[in-house]
Image (cartoon, rainbow, N blue to C red; front, side, top):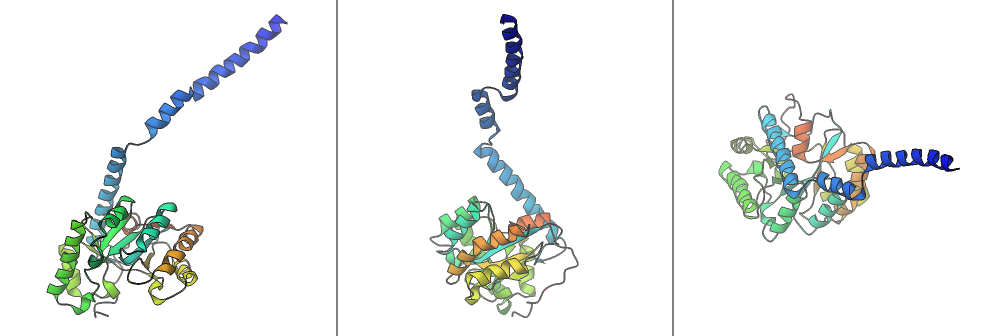
Length: 279
């Protein structure tokens, strides 16, 4: 009986030693988990490197074009964009984006920045991109070059005062631009961002209609137009979770415009879109 007990105990002890060697003690496991978790400084360094890569992606695109309306479509990415904020609807949009692990691009109107400095910083802090959308939302194609310059510079000054980024992206209100617009953007190394999917959320559509427009019309490389300001955006907020779910169901990953430009830049064959007339 003693011999049998020894024969049983030895293999059990060996197994226990092997398991212990593989898994380690609870303390060592916790230490490994703690060690693997990046510090705040490391996370900032990772983010800074990604932003630098995205900046280089914009620079490469500016080598052969002045604008982007969609990516090439080789990757299953789309860009969610929001115009005319920040507003009272922006916090809920940010909450939904964060909750779903999604990022967007916010084209900010300068007149909306005062008293919204914390919101500007929150947009950035949560991994979203920010672009210039003029000071007070005029039709740029109907303005003189001097007035267009003021629209760009005054918005940028307000953004800087709010602790915001140096903006590399510009979206013309009403899709209105002309040759002067493109020359001013080129001088500032800024990319004009248009869109190929219009949700129509500014037309008083229901949340279901907004979501259907976004999901049904999107394709790999799409840039999707929505609004977080400029009116009652209750239905945009209500539609956003369904839009994100619908896109992901179609295996389309929502990303920022700089990420789309980096990962899936358009070809140099894209023609200049309509808009030069100022309409």
